[in-house]
Length: 544
Ligand code: ARG
Image (cartoon, rainbow, N blue to C red; front, top):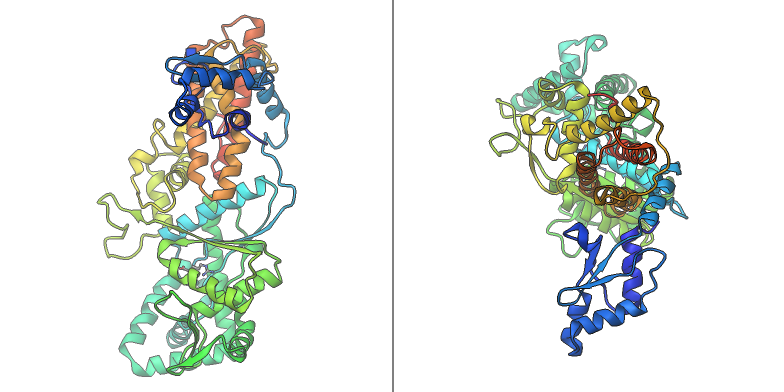
């Protein structure tokens, strides 16, 4: 759906010949939008700007949208949307099950690879960001009608299992009582053994070969480690209230069976070459090649992602693949995409994007670490935020902080600021929603019903209605550019306009028709806030 400003802009451009660059009017008496297009054209045409403005206004066909535009000052054109148009836009949106989010005509199959923690390790802040951002992409793209497949590419394969399994055997560890935190401790002990004993290291390497060869006892222990880890991940997912579940799991081991094939295929077509005993693919513009098989004959992270791309295109029928990891993996994905394109696994018709995000910083502005210098666990962060707020609010605070500044930026994990109910925070938006709910509850108690939105005589009502009408467009922008901060910005502005409306326009104390219309506006605001927060993965509370 084209937004009202976009529609108006198109019509003006059709007459002016250039983008009118509509700006929101600075004062209500200037209407809703202002354009300086006549001043710009005057420079090139050598005609007085007011004359040009008049010429444009005379030719405009915007009666269905606007009052007759004013020409102001040196030649600005001021546009005032008809209040009937604004009211109709809000009423249409409120009655639409998709709240004005138009559904794409031809849904794309979008594979989103996110969260992707590693087995036998607890999730850390980086996985928190990936999980929250990926969850938002999933929700937003689904809301526009795309066909989304989430893929949780957990690290469930690789050399680390050799040492983990050897350590378990050495300790005769009871796996029945091990949880994820315990597995992480095990991981540390296994690492110590690996670093201190050659003999252990040899056994660990041999164990990897056994695992890859399908040795039954080895596989059983491996499977058990995955079960333990999955249970731990699922606890966190539930705590985070995200959409991921076991059906989305497709860990690195999924692609194990294809790695030989991929290596042979790349080698036989001359795409991969032997280099210092390893099989690699060189790509122009990259410092180092992609490693298909290392000199010991093992497969690693690069080739696994190349095989995963092939699988996602061929089996999952992806039209678009999105990866959400921290920005430091940008080169890895650029290289994997380049190799996959070269090999024809990733045809030009399929888009592949890596959305790299910045780091979470501690209060000192340095990467967030524990006192011991290790990465902070996600559960500790949640515990921390919950000291200041209820779980619902704490989660909103974290998610909003994660999504509301450009993803590429680092952000400081500042619990005080994030959980405040004023300012650009998640709790502030929740609070705006609860306020709408309050008003509607109070109205109901007094026997007042909302009606469709009617007159919109006050500028504050018009501003709110105009903002509401832009919801669908805001969601589509986020779906196209993968920029959740723009949805946050939209909702923050909506909450702000609502707050101004509520300051200036009495609702319950107004006369019948005005009251009912204003209640309608409150109800529509509540609907949009609730839907918008849901797209961010944030709960919209009825009371706060
Ligand atoms: N497990 C990796 C990590 O923790 C992230 C995996 C991202 N996805 C992928 N297809 N490589 O860093």
